[in-house]
Amino acid sequence: MFKFWGDGSQEAMSLVDAIRVRSTENFNWTFIFILAVVFYVYWSEINKKNYEAVCAGLALYGVHWLYEIGNAVIGHVFGYPLWSVSNASTTFILLVGVCWELSMMFSLAGIISFKMMPQDRSTRYFAKNGKKGVSCKLIVALEMALLFALFESFLAGTSNHSFIWVYRWWGVLPVFVTTYIPFFLASNYVPDMEPKKRRNFLLVLWGLVALLLIILIPLGVI
Image (cartoon, rainbow, N blue to C red):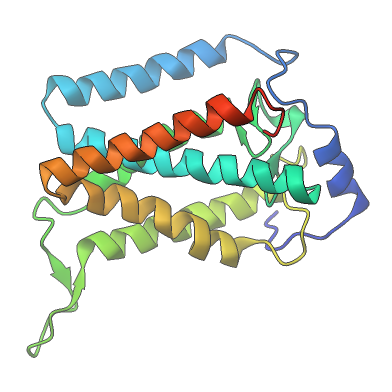
């Protein structure tokens, strides 16, 4: 059921070779429903003036898009990306490593992580005997990263190959360390930046994402 590393198999490579990016062949109405749910969550937070939660969501989602663009570029340059999604597992593939359902989940993941922290985000765990302890932001980021890495391991082991790992050295551990920890550090720390720094961070992040998509998609790179 769980798969912890890529196997370098011909089957995995064939599945990646067959990926149809931005094909509407499997498209269905769940696309609209999921989009409506995401809009509802964000506008609910905005209506409540929970702008920090919105920033958490946008911070993680922007970092997610940078990673997906980088993964697609790796696939273009080296033949295979670090991770991929299969045609059979989704209604719409945005980039080689991310489908619509997965991307919309990541649009909410930052808000979820942010809300899992204590109300007092200055809380530090394991603080005793004069020790400062560990920030709750870091602890929650590590917990969420581990949960997501393990769930990705499950997806990689599904019969419809929801996730595909080609390279033998890529798997749960590198996903946990190099991907999910940065994702959740962004969602947990960015909201508490000074307002100007937070705004600049999000503007630069999303500006870079938009620029890369505008340039690389028409060139056929991603």
